[in-house]
Structures are given as structure tokens and as C-alpha cells.
Image (cartoon, rainbow, N blue to C red):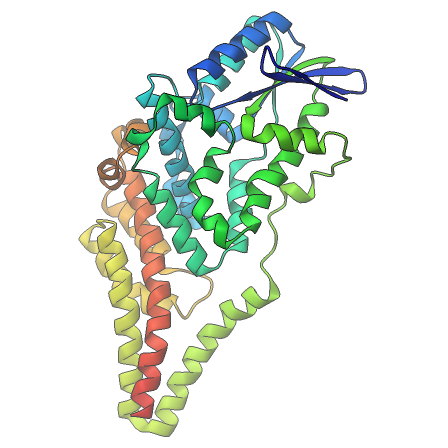
Length: 391
């Protein structure tokens, strides 16, 4: 059963013997923060559910958590793009909040503080961000990934044009959804992962939270979905899994290097030494130059740039390693991030200049842009190699 309380702008939901007050908020709204504090102190619930996962909760509670980041581990675990995406999303929210003189996610901070003041248990209800981003990543092709990166980069601008009255409109959508709206038009499945899956996840977690009297604080864009799935019996295990790569993706991953190597053999066998050598030359040039361009765009160290041109032609033939991982590791050791880079990270990511200046984000940019350059180099090289053979 669902009842609306228009005076408090909340929803009252019931599950078994539990009474849940659902508050829909804007993550950058001062009014939302005040409302959350008022409702929790007024209701004095047993439990306060918040739209956070464990990693994001720890980031809020441990302000110096960035200082413990192991960039080498991030690169080895292939999480550079996921981390960079998360930082850019945080930047978007922080700059809007700063514009209106509030803390980003202040309504969540108020929920935590108010829960502690009334001695309510804090319950994390959202799916981990890396699972959401990983699920997105798995369904996107190279071109869509490039558009995703472009949209995230665009989020670094345009915030100054947002007025405080526009924040009310932002209550109707998820921050991540608003940034990726253009990509979503081409890849509609993104909405399912970004919004629908999380609506189901939040609904399940909230109604199964401990306690009989519960206040749940979520982005207002999720409220209709939570109400929609409230009466459903939801199995969240599939929503917590990162789908394996498709058979076609695996075949492409291993098949493309085999095709390239076959072209080399075919070139030497049927065209002779000169043709085969020229084909290799074009392969090295296309991969190396575009990978170098990526490293230069990221303002990589000279050793990083050199490593990209040396690594790209070889890593493009090895499905187990990427040029950006090599260049990223070189960048880490050539310009080892200092404590101040970790301390300044949350401020530096709010500007394009800071994003490129901070040694932490520069490493991530090196990984991403070098990999993009190397991938493009592979597709540029193939027609050039065929042209040499046909000539």
C-alpha cells in the first residue's frame, strides 16, 4: 500500500509490519537537506536508509580515503576508466553544490548526522557504483564508449548556467542519467542499468531493511520506480553481477590479432619481403602515432609518450594487455603522485585544468587516451596494410 503526503513531500509505504517514509531529494538542494533533517528528527525511526553504497559511504566518512589509493592496483585491475568516470560524476555534482553554497550530497550528510542524533541504524541501500558502471561498460561498443567519455568531459562545463530554480527540475532525474542523456538516446539499454535496475535494487533493500519504522532518503528520480516495484518479489543477485563478455566479444578480442598476424604472413608470402615489411611499417606507424597522440593529449611524461609508441604495436596483438596500462604504469613511476595530489583531488577534478594538472587524474587520463589512440590505430592500420598489398 502507498500513500502520498503532499505537505511533507514524502511517500509512506508499508511492507509486512514495517512503516517506511520515503523522501525524494535533489542531491544538490539546500531545501532537500533541510527536509531530510526535519523528517528524521520528527519521525525518530529505527533505521535510516540512504542512497549510498559501501565505497561511497566510506568516502564520505573518511575524508582522507583518497590518500590510500593504489594507482598501480587500479591500472592492473583495469579500473582506470571506471575511477575516472566516478571522479567526473562527483565533479559535476560538487560544482553545482558549490555554486549554491552547499556541500555535495548534503542531504545524505544530513541523513547520516540526523540518524546518529536519534540513534537510528544507518542502512546502505544502493548498488555499488563500480558494478553499475561495469555493467554499462559491458554493453557498450568502442564508439559508444568514446561518446560516454565525451559526455563526461562535457560535464566539466556549463554548470554556471544552472539556476537554483533549475535544481527542482533535477529532482526528476538521476545525476548520472542527466549527464548520459545523449548517449542513452543511442543506447537505450543504459536507462535500464542506470535507473530501472537501481529502482528495483533500492526497493528491495529498503523494504528489507531492519527495524519497523524506517526513513529512506533517495534521489527523487528513483521514487516512481521504487513505488512501481514495491509490490514485486525482487531477486537482487543478478543485479549485483557483472555480465561475462559475450562469445562474439571474446571471438573478436582473440580473432582480430590473428587476422592481423595472418595479413603479415600473407603479405610476406605473396608479396615478398618489401610488401611484408611495408605492412609491418604501417601497422607500427598507425598504432604508435595514435597511441602517442593519446598520451600527449593527456600531457604524459616524455617517458610515457615513448612507452606508448613502443607498446602500442605489440599490445594491440596481445588481447591480455593494453597500451594504456603500460603507459599508465610508466606515468605512475615517472611522476609519482604526492600526498598533496591526493589531498587536492576533490578540488582539482572540478576544472579541466585541475583534471590535467593533478598527477592522479593525469595517470587515469594517460591510460584512457592511450588506449583509445591504440584502438583507433588498429582500425586505421588495416586498410593501409591492405592498400600496400594491393598496390
